[in-house]
Image (cartoon, rainbow, N blue to C red; front, side):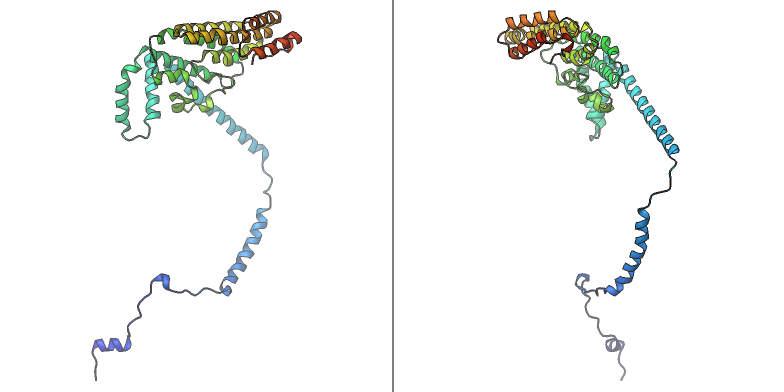
Length: 341
């Protein structure tokens, strides 16, 4: 009896068992007999390689390598010199006039404050329009010029072998800072963007961030970082150099600082600030000035002024340390005296 195609399929091709998901299928784990030949081969190959890695290379051409290293070093120095020169030229060019300095500031702000922001171009245009009048003010442009001039000097000071050559320029800058007080006197309170230019360290400025000046700026111990800190500039940038030279100009720097601080306190017209200056700050500065008299070869004059300060200021916070200094001065040879602390 003949069956149809469906019957033949059922007879000779029985239905397949349902296929289990892959995660339920058990695999046969290969035996160690399968892995053993591979392990033997790996051991045979690895042993010579391990021995080879412990052997040194043949002798190198030391002269040729040293010459190559020296060439690389010279190229690296030349590249850095060119980079520093380019930065100095840019900063120096921007420190010529107020409008030029303001344009330079705009570029720095664009790159630092708006870089990577969504709709950067439109956002910067809005900022520029909002600050156009402010950037044209006499006070802002004066602050920018002072900041850029001081930044230029700082870049020159880095790794300078004869820093004493910079003293006249630094003193001229100090006089510019003092003269700028008349420009700022009309402001009740300077905007933050303006005050930051003179009150914040150079490394935090928008210019330093834009030009990546960290590696080009001198260390804090040899260079005052705040462009508007007259006392700090005189102490770190000028007196530290004059003391080594025992230059009599050292005493004049104290006269400059005493006058500018007195003028600024008087301008403020706050009686408690005036009293603090007269009773605390001024005597302290005068005592440090007397200590520097010893360095320039005037120990007797120094001792006389120190004793006079002790007599006039028995309640001063530094009275005890002053006593110790005067005793040491009277008991020690002048050549052994050190700079003010």
